[in-house]
Image (tube, rainbow, N blue to C red; front, side):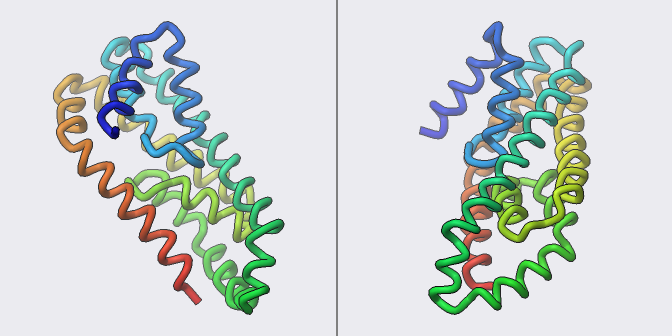
Length: 193
């Protein structure tokens, strides 16, 4: 299944509507989609290296806007569903302490998740749940996602096909790390005081 989803994304790269598809994939990856937009960005840059920076910008904008949607998911669903559940089980006070702690370090959490394999979507939703300052969240997201996608585009622009081969050889590992980080993030949220 992972390979077929990856192959489907690669086919999008050759389509005449690849740039809007890149935006959409970057947007939904920031809140729900399991495959990072890099798998579309890489072949697009390989196919049109002169558009590398344009594609990186599209990716960054889509990802940051998707991150804001993830923030909204966390913010609005927490108030309507999550908070009453916490109160029912007596964890509302502990969550308040966690939210304060998270918000002290939230900009770093957003930045680290934005540039590493840790699922950015977990942090976008968590940032909304804890009501991290929207300005801090947005600035950290722009810096992190900009760095990530411009570095990827720059590497592909400079080195070309060998970089794609490196990523494709490790697709299973990248996906495994994603799953472990996603599950680990949810477990950490469950057991943090």
